[in-house]
Image (cartoon, rainbow, N blue to C red):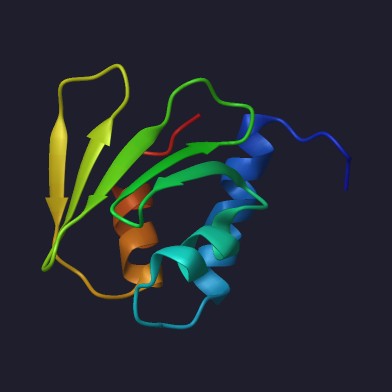
Length: 102
């Protein structure tokens, strides 16, 4: 594997990694640790997570609410609301809705 991967390579590796994940309860720190090899991440007080696939210029913001996640694409007007409780389910929904496309 190359030391510097393209955004498409990181995206494909993230797809494969999500398939092998177990269903675990969502915790911001754990979630960020799991996707850090494939995505550049930031967090603000465990309530807002900024994620973008490494090598990509566009990312998303995840606002953590009590019962849902509000996803906003950077540089876009769309907002998505996902109701789920596991890291794997959230990542699957992000990938299904093409929110992490590099």
